[in-house]
Length: 504
Image: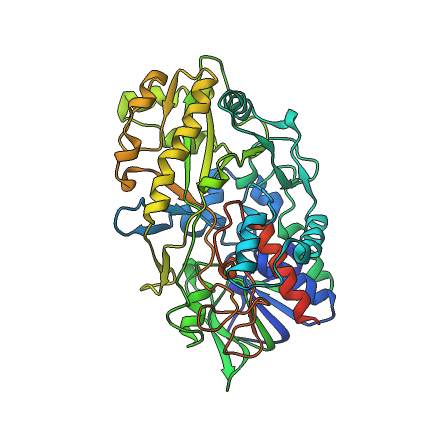
């Protein structure tokens, strides 16, 4: 990819380009559309705000370096809580390959119950399992989706699975887009073996091989229109010192595809005067995530093994999915409770810690508004139903670790020290304000949702923006509801559908 990616940072003066299709964003949605349309003979230009970091360079970085170079705002984005809502740290990629580069590689198809809701209640008739099968199958082949073998599970995950079985939870193998994975647990920060098949290793190189151009350091701020038709995009090159906005960018194109993600696609539409104001930027879902740590007498070394290898849908009917995870030692150490000597003592126990997490299948209480700078102001109000799911999720995680023999439990409650197993039932999780819980998200979806009518959605089921010809959206922002599972594969399948419809 390196030799075939142009850096606008090094370009002098204004940049004017011409293409059949311009794609804004190079992540899971944009890369797929670019690859499919370039293969079909279209002249494609892909514009990416972030830098191009070759995977072999990313693999050599420490986690702190990775966060500084390829994570948006150093992974410190927050959805501002409204009412009784936790502050949610939302992480996403800002580089060629987008968030695909920093995911754990987890791949789920859209759950059947979600598809039935889309077809029966949202009237998206072509989104049943049979209709979506060819798109999922095509993506799974191209990115090499495979099941994580049980023997590659970390000891952390194995301990959770042991306790979960005693609690009646069904723990299943995870599927990921990996090939020749060696279980080093660094998926989110650059695989040293290039085993994670993110889009910078398949769809983007394929697009380039068919003549596509990929430009980094290009900040798009609006869609150009002529009458009711999109005719290109404009923005700025990030070619001033410090990566600040510099010369002007203009790309003339017959068709425009926005794939800047649920965080930024609505900003571009709003700035362009496109889309109904009561729909664009509304209904953002996040899959608020929570994790529990458990200390065992035995060494666990949870970083040894596949980062994410198992999951449980036992509580799916309650809107909760449990998923394995672990984080780098340096990051984990910084999050341990206490200060001074107490914090140091807790951090020294990291090799005895296990971790498991879960996400809430939320109802869409987020909103994206333009902020004073590049980043939007994103607010999130959690519903009463979703708040009630948090203690259920935390108790399921902690209960499994207690059943596995944990000596101490660390719950995601701000200000709460470690809890002894026999004290767990007495922790008043159900009465705690939701803002006391520590939460994170990697799955912003739905801020430009698709639907059956322009009155309630931004695009139709093919990703076509209702009121503007030649303009499509192909990223997580058009997913009409949260999924309850990691969305990478679903976004790629929907983007494949958009691209195949575009090429006829």
